[in-house]
Length: 97
Image (cartoon, rainbow, N blue to C red; front, side, top):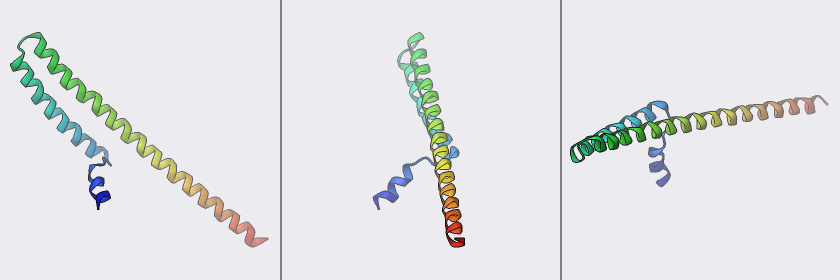
């Protein structure tokens, strides 16, 4: 049961990643606007930029990790098909001998 619940928190597609990045951006802009009202002037603008810059870095990391995991799954699938093809060839040569 715990495994089924934990699967809800795994990002599987790029669409899910973009939705999470969008939610992060909304929160960052909200927090940045609070900084602008609390710290008027240059300091508030710097804090606002820091909030939005963190979203850019987090979004890039999420998308990069997603691409890496997909490439890793494709490599594992290719390896599995290569191993099964090799097994079929070995079985065919053993049958003919």
